[in-house]
Amino acid sequence: MELRALSRLAVPAVASLLALTTACTGGTVQGRPGASGLRDPYFPKAGNGGYQVDHYALDLDYDPADGELHGTAVITARAEQGLSSFNLDLSGLKVEGVTVQGVGARYNRTGNELTVRPAEDLKKGEVFRTEIEYGGKPKALTDADGSKEGWITTEDGGGGAAGVDAPAGADARAGAVGVGEPVGSMTWFPGNHHPSDKATYDITLTVPRGYEAVSNGELRSRTEGPDGRTAFAWHSPEPMASYLATAVVGPYKVTTGRTPSGTAFYNAVAPGEAAASAGTLARLPEMVEWGNGRFGPYPFSTAGAVVLPAGSLGYALETQTKPVFSGPLESEELVLHELAHQWFGNSVSPKSWKDMWLNEGFATYAEWLWAEDHGGPTAQRHFEAFLAGDTSVDEEADSDWDAFPPASPPGPDQISDQPVYYRGAMVLHRIRQEVGDEKFFALVRGWAADHRHGNASTADFTAYAQEKTGHDLKKVWDVWLYGEGRPKQPAAPK
Image (cartoon, helix red, strand yellow):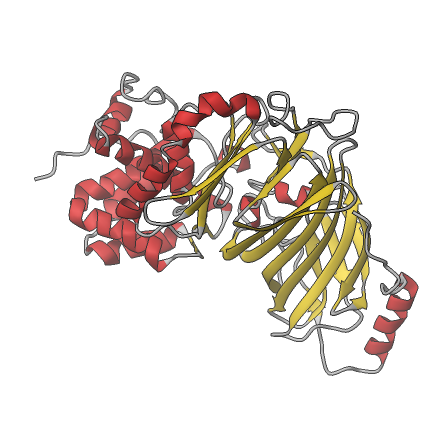
């Protein structure tokens, strides 16, 4: 992409003079710097204070041949205080210019913090537009648990799409994927990268002809340019946490359709993984319909999946509307797990990373419910298997699921460990045992509906569960959610 002219961006010295003049004339706005982090219990520098983002418009141009990404990010936000400066999270890439409200702004970088100083202070409540031009070779980050996230290059996935000539370039069929949990999205676009600040998105990806470019939401247009490049414009009308944003580039095979109730789906599969993944992906519409019955209406306008070339990632991720999988995709439980996250984690997102069990416990319990409804072990049988270490029911039953309370992971390297998933699911089953099926499933559907497209904490859930069911669940919280050690088999319900 040819970057737009930056002549309208003020030279830093001029911007500095403008800011100094404003300060010396005693303007009515008395702004102060926004915080450079939200003090998340595990990622204290993630996100930024003083504003909330309403919308991201990302215009990205990527060339797989040289790994260069050039972007324009237009961020529309609302000031929650008077702001003399504010921060954005951005890792690695070079900033080439910044404007705020159309006027050049001073900026500086410290680590992963991009500090922006508008020419004039922003007023509390003011809706403001920040535009950042940036580029470079984005890189992956290594999480505290050793996994990779951020912008990751992928292999060709099976020799390219049928009938498509390889684009010119050294590694013509290589691609890339952008994944962000917990903080990797800052490697490919600047933003307020904490799950508590959700926004709508428009993401345009321009890539060489012969590649597909996939992102969240609905594909609004696909435009072939005279320069041999194709622009894919994606629109996400529902709010999204930035860690759930994705950008996928490669020679993918695309299929589209609708579920019986009318939800559109869009699947993109690496050619080499298509045959092995076809049977599992064919059940995706059925899974959406099942979720509608168990959890309430599907919370987004589209569904789907992206199957990456084998070995691209060491995990699957619930990126909004289109979870990404590192193929071949042969496990329907894995698809069901990431689909369940669309309700629990994506629509109802955590307020902080300490609340991860609300994502993973619900998605794991959804796997147990799917098995229960389709001739497999019941959720009660799964629960008993974990207590007994019976791997004949679940191969993870002898894992360290009791190593710590699911609501209190010891550190950032353990927010995706077994207790968050499996003991989190057991917490939900203990509620079901205490209140009975009718109240339990009313609770699950009510939680998804009443917090739709919002954020919630563990404290929000425990209060909601007690109010919705009318039961005192303090023992469940004390023993299963916050208690140390392995809980004992509860007494059979009367």
